[in-house]
Image (cartoon, rainbow, N blue to C red; front, side, top):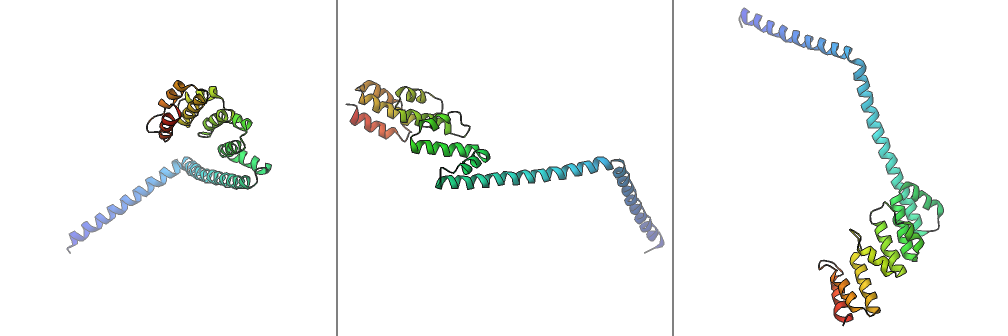
Length: 198
């Protein structure tokens, strides 16, 4: 290599080192200027991550305690401590447990108390079961008119059976006709229509 090429290479190397030091100085000035906000941002991020981890651990603990309480209640329904734990830690599961107890015991009082439950389907099923246990045709009729009623087709079939028992064949046919073809109850309705409503 010639002397000129060596000098050019040396200049280029010095320029790159100069640029490196220049950027280091800029970074240092930036950090000094915004040191407090940067520290605050890092601290806030760490707190947010720590809070999220703590909240998830808290939620997992509640789920585990409610599952344990639920298992105790399945074996011993009269355990008031487990019932209170389930009620506090998982109100929706508590309502579901109470619904199963109300249905198993045909307890209208328990079922009536679940009319305003937030758990999916619990209030709907409790309303149907209350009407079915009471044998109240008016309540069943009201239930069938509810939007999105889960047991609507079963309630229609029950109303048809009640109408047949009362000798009102026209009403029975009308109720059976309301059961859609894609319903699992449709075949039972057709059988009732064929054999029961003659």
